[in-house]
Image (cartoon, rainbow, N blue to C red; front, side, top):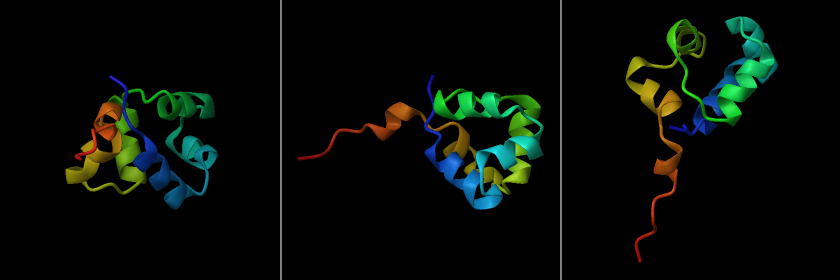
Length: 79
């Protein structure tokens, strides 16, 4: 499944200014972070936990940042 990462990317820039600064802080290579975000890949394990803590994402909002399907963004318009 491919995930929509726009909300997550916005939060990263709000908190860290750049994706590079966030990648350094989380201990991830910038290219790995870029792939996660650009390809909408699933975050797993300790990287997910670190990201939630660093970005101060409330636990009840984790799904909307990390697991919102890109398909959910393409809902048909009601006419």
